[in-house]
Image 1 (cartoon, rainbow, N blue to C red):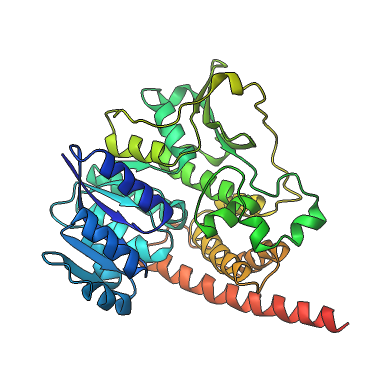
Image 2 (cartoon, rainbow, N blue to C red; image 1 turned 180 degrees about the vertical axis):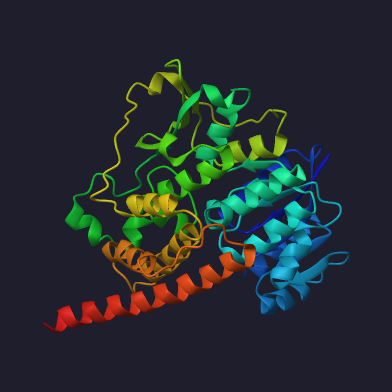
Length: 393
């Protein structure tokens, strides 16, 4: 029996994780759950899965969770509450399904406590990839990726000597705007952007898919997860989203991982590792796979990919600044305060003002995150003022 805690259990990955747990009650036991603010949904999950501990990042919502009347369940709040869930002594594996810097301290504390980690939040490895991976190595902790592309690469690389690997290839569907001309992309609305052609995901990650920032973040994540230099990681656009990752070997061979677009597949692979559990799910229809396409990403129409690559080359705290600025810009776009075309402008403006710290500590990473969010907010205000000025003529 594997005992798990889920950080971000009310989000799309968290919900899918609990679906996997419910399908394998003989193999998985839910010890802890946490959410950012959705106390109502968390309360329903707690009643169904009966964990020992539950936490809400928002302290006010923690009080709402307590009012659900959950006998025998410890209810906690804030980052300390998330840390309590992640480090509970009965937990074997922590599923990190929440993004943002609020989950970074619980992740670090879980690794320090010797918990294995299944990680779906690419932002945390973008924020602190060097720190997290070095700490995991020193504590003998496994970092198992859930993100579909990295889960594919993780499975492909099993048993392959690193000296045989020439290149990792991360695929991406291109999102809903891939075929659009540049001028139309710049004016895309939130409703248009959120209509992803292949995946059902959270709002923020769906916007990242549309800007191709998601692919840039995944390049940074892959660099730390697999110990491969950025120069050996490539992104290709694959609209059918059947091939989730490829590994090119130095003899010219190429390994590919293929599966339907169902997040429960990489989640179950991570939770069952090193075993494989059966599942009654959709299989690929081989006779329907005659039209697979692969394209180079268009850096001119999707500049966020290049911004992420620049931050990765700068290294150190630059990636934390990139992630925070992107968070601010995407949130503003979803609120209708920023055009789609202005998202990379806010990110670029923030990156240009930073002073890179080569090997930041946890405290420095969190401070860089705070600085970048404040700086991006100022850039957002400037963008709005410029837009208003243009409108006035």
